[in-house]
Image (cartoon, rainbow, N blue to C red; front, side, top):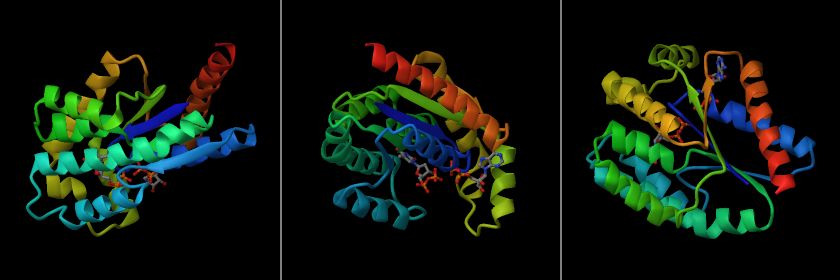
Length: 208
Ligand code: ADP
Ligand code: TYD
């Protein structure tokens, strides 16, 4: 089973993924947690390039194709074999991030995004995708709270992140596999929402 988490930076994805993975392991499921970009030797090299050139001269299309190249490696070398071995694979971001950030955010035509996403993933679709939704003011509050030097919101602009958020909400309204989580709730409340959905899906899998 493939479960993905999506959302703006600092929306709480890694917090919820850790809690879900712990819970699944307590219930004796084999779990693998992955993070995009990365997860394979080639993917890690690509991650280094993307982080390195973040503010210097990378075009949106160049960026999109690098994310996609990392994704293609991850799908073939890790995700497919692990799913075949019966594991629950949890991904911190997957191709919906490209649709939201490079498509809705940077303006790359959505049909091109869809075509490359399908190619990079060999049409592998998550069984379940959580979108943790928080307003931009909350992202900024969390950045200030953590006193982090680099402020992604400031460097890309609020309008960019508003488009990304709206893009995610659009995807969520179109695709059945999406669940929108109210990211302003407490960590425990969100965890309970996540678990309710995952537990129901696991039961369905056992029946079929
Ligand atoms: P992401 O993986 O999406 O970047 P994190 O899980 O690292 O997000 O969370 C970003 C920050 O927000 C962390 O400091 C975390 O403790 C905090 N945080 C996560 N979930 C919540 C929540 N529901 N309410 C308040 N703060 C949260
Ligand atoms: P990272 O630090 O891994 O993410 P997070 O803040 O969620 O912990 O950085 C990933 C960044 O790359 C994040 O800003 C989203 C962006 N991204 C894209 O623009 N497109 C993609 O396809 C992916 C996977 C990520």
